[in-house]
Amino acid sequence: MATDTHAAAGHAAEAASAPGMPQLDFSNWGNQIFWLLVTLVVIYFVLSRIALPRIAAVLAERQGTITNDIAAAEELKAKAAEAEEAYNKALVDARAEAQRIVAEAKAEIQADLDAATAKADAEIAAKAAESEKAIAEIRAGAIDSIREVAADTAKEIVSALGGKADAKAVEAAVDTRMKG
Image 1 (tube, one colour):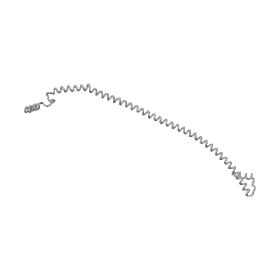
Image 2 (cartoon, helix red, strand yellow; image 1 turned 30 degrees about the vertical axis):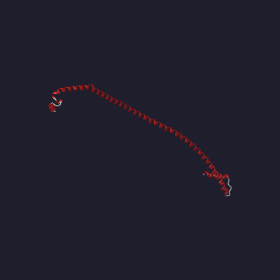
Image 3 (tube, one colour; image 1 turned 120 degrees about the vertical axis):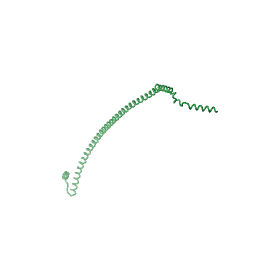
């Protein structure tokens, strides 16, 4: 066991005298720099020949897609503006057509109303003329009745007072009185 302890102590002393980390050993730096340069060149070629062209292709495809989408959006925006303009024009045309239809309907209704008014005025005028004629006949009849009543009354009054009434004299007196 003592030999094992001696051997372990020998290894510890050997490890302590070792230069330390191999990366920091100046005797190995030429080798390390060579392999570093070889590794960097290999990484450069792998990246420049394989990875970066793929990344560039993806970026170009993405840029193309974005450009196409923007162009499509511009086109759709233009179509939407045209559609809105067409809609507004159709709306204006529809309103104008509605106004024209309303004006025509008003004119037609006014014409019908004027015709109905003229017809009603004519009927009213005809009935008024008939009424005037009837009133004139009634007046004429009333005046004749008044003369007759006045003549009869005058005869009765003269008879009641004890006189004899002459029909022609009574008629003349009533006519004179009726004229004013």
